[in-house]
Amino acid sequence: MPKDASGRRNNLWQVAAKQRGYFTAADALKAGYTYQAQQFHKRNGNWIQIDRALYRLREFLALPGQDTDHLVRWTLWSGGEAVVSHTTALAVHDLGIANPAKVHLTVPPGYRRTASALAIHKGELPPTDILHSDGFRVTTPVRSVLDAALAEADQDVISSAVSDLLHRGIITQRSLLHRAQLAGPRAELSIERAVREGEH
Image 1: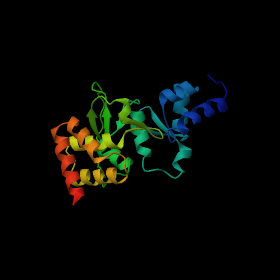
Image 2: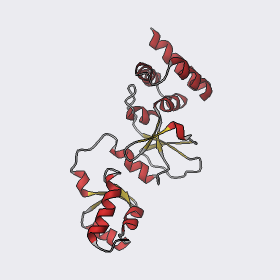
Image 3: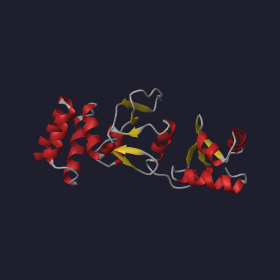
Image 4: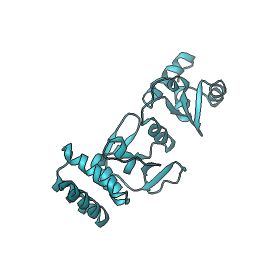
């Protein structure tokens, strides 16, 4: 643990830079900042408090943001447990017309936290259905479409996402229909309808 201020700052910067300027109190402690030092930086405006034990370096507020910055925040808020999913993941992948009002996250079954800005879905995701993005994890394009269909997203959202999936060659129609069948009747019906609409 570095004792000099520049060493601490460098360690924290290395962590925060990978998370678009966000970091947790635990990250700061690991970088060498005591809780007292954390309070000092928060009070002096060096660190912007985003949530309980969640901060952002002031310098990052002046940088051009990305549409997905808030997803890094919610990932850290979840303790790294959450995976961006459903219609939020469709928006991340730029599939169709999804523009969800809430951030959709999939968390493990025993997860307890929630917030009004979130739509929490509980379940186990296999590693093959997860992609690592810049500071957050997100479900794959195919898994995102299937999850949105299972959650009964508007048919227009599903149809536009399926159209993009197929036009980009991410998956074949046959494979998508097979995955939808395995996911269950609700997903199968929605995906079949989307495929039929795309054929006209």
